[in-house]
Length: 100
Image (tube, rainbow, N blue to C red; front, side, top):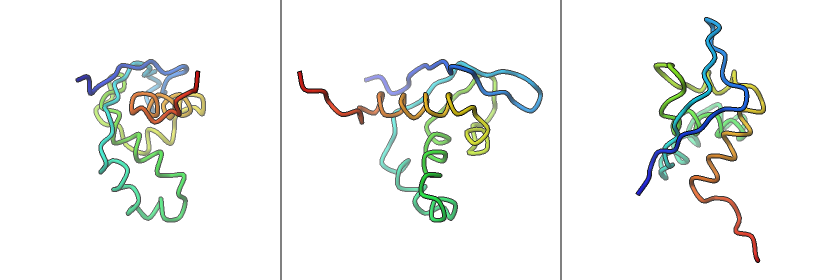
């Protein structure tokens, strides 16, 4: 069973040194990946922030970055955040099934 999936960000994450990171890997989500963020005070203040924490937990590689933290996700371009949210739903089979 495949548990990690390669992706390419549309724009890419620009780090503080000016390096662009576009290639990455995301692993399948576990129940704890969605439960743990609910305890975070930032999520209690703003439930939408759960997405940032979840993505930081399931992205296992992004370019040459040593760590993918919530701060990295916060500083992504909106198009890349949207792409990652869609990719997360797709690989975890959270997309609604279309009736044919």
